[in-house]
Length: 348
Image 1: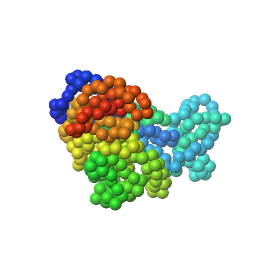
Image 2: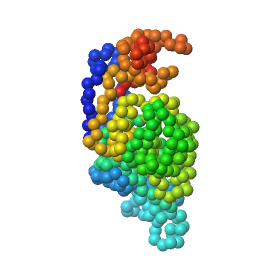
Image 3: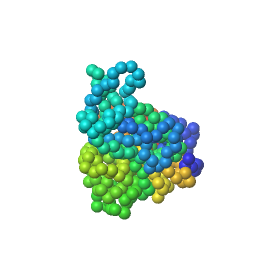
Image 4: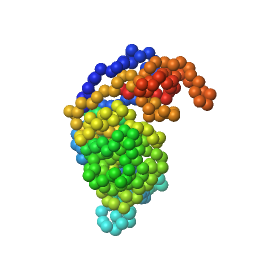
């Protein structure tokens, strides 16, 4: 388990009346249960209680899944059930008649079975080391890891792993011309945002993953479309994942998160999609704790700004004529500013 340095916070929640009303954002999660979905036709390669290592195949899925119809079995005896594996009877002619060699039984209708199958099966490798906590046919495989994980908002593409590299500052933007082959094999911290061109180039040069504060809806659609085309054309495409920390609107990476990335830089990390998180592999890294009075604006005109808690402000009238419970936040050396409490978050 990764250690944390418990440096004294300037203010504790108990010493700051009203601070407990601010939404608490958890920085680290441990242990983490990483869930890998089993789509129709997929096959688990592990069993509950089995120890797995990073890079070990845990399930097998079809690149081009389809449904085939096969005759059902007649008579008494061991009748198949949905979720069971199906194998085509021997003989080339019989296999060609079914159009598939194996698959997963889905349901029976009119004396025939619908089977999820495909032509080419690919293994999915575990990005983390841990123990198989649960295997649910037709649902997924859960791997429990004792490592700590930095939690994000969403994840795109598949799970991946590599050495963490901080490529730009918290409010920077990594553009396509700054992505080079020297970053191949790494997971890159890319600052406030990236465009679709930079993401496509990162994929092409062999980068294993991207950590970014925000990714626009258009960029997400363009990248996912490019990823589908690439996987349809290339067999055995290397893993690649994107961890979005905050959402779609541009904002800098929160300073507590950036401090964690800088502490972990150079170590092996992994991106998992459920929950969306960056898993830290090295248990010897000391991770700093955020200051207790640090708050961040998560929505509104000042989204992304960070300051220190300065107390409750009571009901205040804001633009559009709405009255909301507010709090004073001090940004740098300027006088405190009233911010709706619902627009704030604190880190723990």
